Amino acid sequence: MSDATDCLFCRIATGELPADKVYEDQHVTAFRDINPVAPVHILVIPNRHIVSLAHTEPDDREILGHIMSVLVKIAASEGLAERGYRTVVNCGDEGGQTVSHLHFHLLGRRQLNWPPG
Ligand code: 5GP
Ligand code: ZN
Image (cartoon, rainbow, N blue to C red; front, side):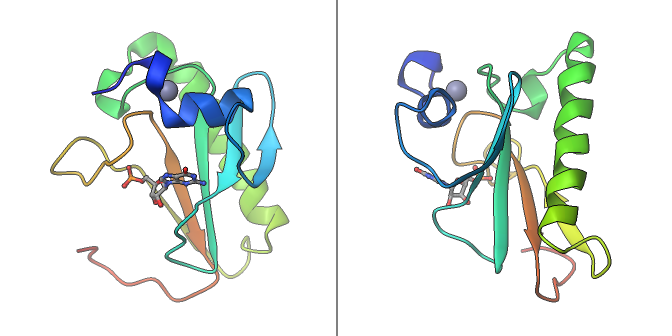
């Protein structure tokens, strides 16, 4: 697992690496996924380096709640509130996590299937 110094998403959060950002504030950044799997595919991350959901502590509930509330607002601004959408957090190897900085996927504007692969 990478640390903050060489972390791709930390570098996107600081602006060191470019991304198509749709929202940012002091605590979180949201940007379009470089390899979208749905017409809307946005990632919401804490600006602070947290490796995965499994690395969160009870004290992180405020940032976790904030990320969810930002997701809801972005979903509405992307026109997804009525039609529906999905949010996904892949955690660890078997969860399919490929970038070791906590991120919430927001997927929408197509019919999504269940269960995921
Ligand atoms: P994971 O598989 O870890 O849940 O999701 C990582 C996501 O990050 C993937 O959907 C992948 O396409 C996306 N991603 C990886 N590198 C970059 C990048 O440099 N820029 C952006 N915008 N997305 C990236
Ligand atoms: Zn990071």
